[in-house]
Length: 601
Image (cartoon, rainbow, N blue to C red; front, side, top):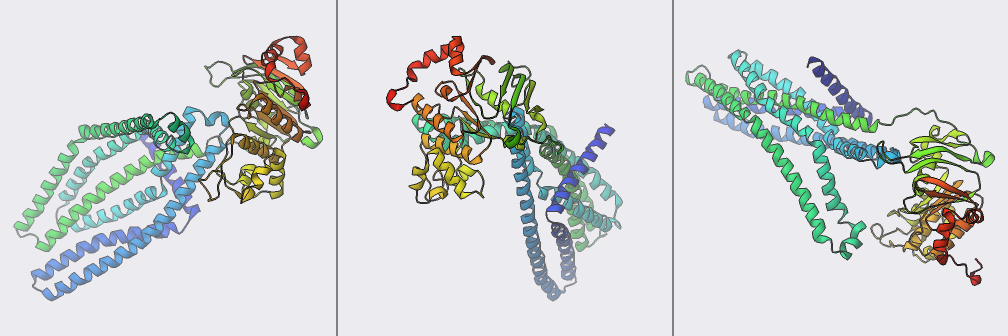
């Protein structure tokens, strides 16, 4: 137990020190405002006590004029102290919020750095949600306010001990014992509260999804088409009800186990006030002394209870800081990476060596024992039925997933040895589920605020979207969707696909991938887009991924996936001659790919 307590103390000091260092690095002047706030709080407390004693003494001595003067001066002094305190607190709060927002941004930035294969993991999502909550729960202001409370409470408690030092030391001891006992319940409640955070996080996430996401524009079509208003509203009500029941359970648990703290507090008040009242009745103290002692009891109780609560808060907040630090510092690696090959000189050759992959340790293999070679400039089509593993194949090649078994090499070097972002720079990809951002057309193509305008226009032209863009009043500066910008516009499904292709063209990476972005189009239109993309990427390595075979005639090599394995590999004519899986698939789809003489295809 002693070892555990020491460990908690060390971790708490370390975590609080982390927040204090972050504040120091962010804005050193904060600590000046923080100290001023502490001093002003102490002054405000003791000025009130001194004023009350002085006025009562003046009234007892019938110095009414002086009593009136002090009664006028006191509000003015307190107003001045309060005004200065408000100004200091406001400035301090601004700095606190600034650091808090910076830390929130750091959490978001870290989330975008998490490897793709982990970002969609349920446990990882919980860590992210908890880290976001931890930024608020462990806000710099909360930590440093607790430290300020500890300092001011220690000084206030010392002042009360000085006041009571000439009266009865047993009063001080009684106050300390009773207040400490009274604080146990509060500490226990906070510990219990922390233990419920994971359950709360899950409920809150479901509530947010139903209330803020399902009711938004993303699902507007489905909500109205299928009349989902009552269904989603019921989901929202269910989540709210779960949250309410959890809060009610937590509240009942606290009062059920810690009701005795209220009785202890009542005993303390009766004992102390009775003793001070006895001293006044017996003539041992004056009325002004009585007010000072009563005020001091309240100050001491607040100071001791405040310190225990502040320390408990610091320990509690330290746990959130720990979660935040663990999230922000996870996946830390050194900066030693293999150097990417110069593809302009050496080309790019990808080799898959007995690659297998599954999403979790106990799950089935999605891909099994894949071995293949992709050379520079090759046009490769990866085909297979839905669920054959085509997209997983591409994500493994891009390094978004790590092989469960085997290796993927680039020019003989394991791709895991390269910096992830540098390696991804080799790929221009258009996924089936690509996203259009509520940014300008130019930003959607370049995916950066500073872009080459000529390059954007060239990419749009190559993708076949120039007629649409040139007809818009703001051209490439037009915002997509009307959520941002008065002249915002919406693109049709086909136009969005062209925009996604323009994005890949603008990136101008040596390897281009089309992962079924045209699955919603007719086979003929799909073939036309694939043909256009093949022309745009004439000197690049290109991978077409499809369960339809329109693009196969554009390919140098076809890789056929079935049940997670490569069952055939070769040119279109070669695979047809084998009369195997590819030939079977092609014959089933043949009526969709009749090449009309008038088209010249």
